[in-house]
Length: 118
Image (tube, rainbow, N blue to C red; front, side):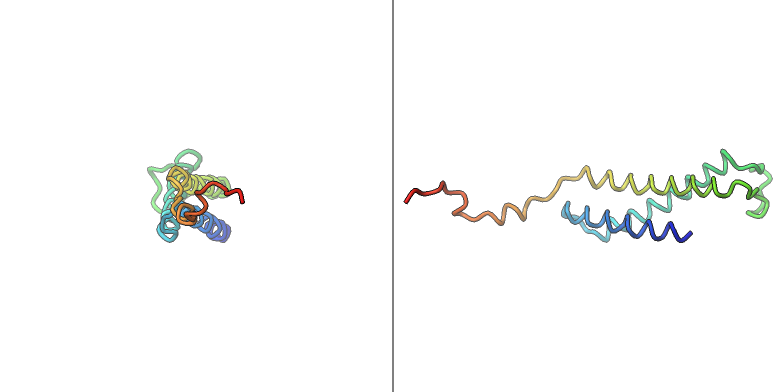
């Protein structure tokens, strides 16, 4: 679905900026987001098929024998699970400490001295 790709693009961008804030590689965490997105989406879709699918799983030979009357519900469950995969990666990133090195390097020696009275 096209909506998945568009939403995933913006969420990867958001996790990338969060990773840069933490001092980590943005591209690495974008790939983690993509991997978690698709893994959670497939797992959620399979879970939804097992719970709400109307066909008998034992007799499922191919995808054409699957009942498609509740396709939108199954797709919604997959999309919600995919967003959960993004939230897992975001939670991992938020737990990591921020980098303060740049702020410390910006402090000059004279900034630490008390103000002089002339």
